[in-house]
Length: 149
Ligand SMILES: CC(C)(COP(=O)(O)OP(=O)(O)OC[C@H]1O[C@@H](n2cnc3c(N)ncnc32)[C@H](O)[C@@H]1OP(=O)(O)O)[C@@H](O)C(=O)NCCC(=O)NCCS
Image (cartoon, rainbow, N blue to C red; front, top):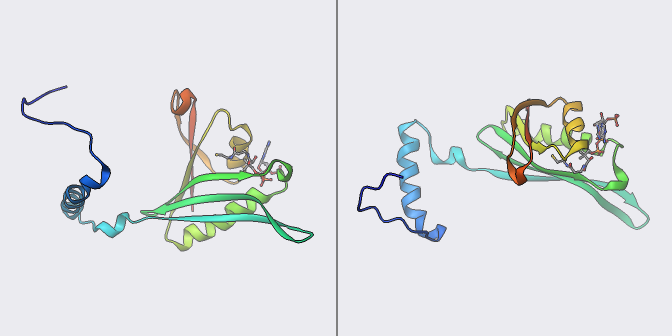
């Protein structure tokens, strides 16, 4: 690593960086014609429920992080006993509608070689493989899937 001889590198608390990072990114964003609010994001949680004797029960959910015209599907799981009944497909149909309403033109997610059911699931609802990342998280091969909305 190149060292100028007077640079001090130290680890700091994230909050200590707030003022510097805010200003530096504001200047950079302005130089690209962007405003900071373009980078604000939000998370949406959708749940799948089934009726029970005394009400209803959550049997699955998806979390989607939305920002910059893109929706990242961060987490999706259906309880073991309720798989292959179309719950995840329904969840993702709902997620797609909300993502579109929020101005997204694209959804994406990452999944891995050990998410065997998921690989088939995402393809079945129209996602396509955009990239393969060998030796990524946990040393596994991960796959990036995308879908144009
Ligand atoms: C992946 C997962 C969310 C799918 O949920 P699900 O409710 O069972 O999926 P659906 O019933 O909506 O399946 C829709 C279609 O996806 C495909 N599919 C889903 N699971 C499949 C499997 N195990 N094998 C083959 N195809 C499968 C099928 O085409 C299915 O349609 P069909 O049942 O009419 O043939 C679920 O298996 C799960 O929670 N897995 C563990 C957690 C996980 O891997 N999450 C995703 C992380 S990226």
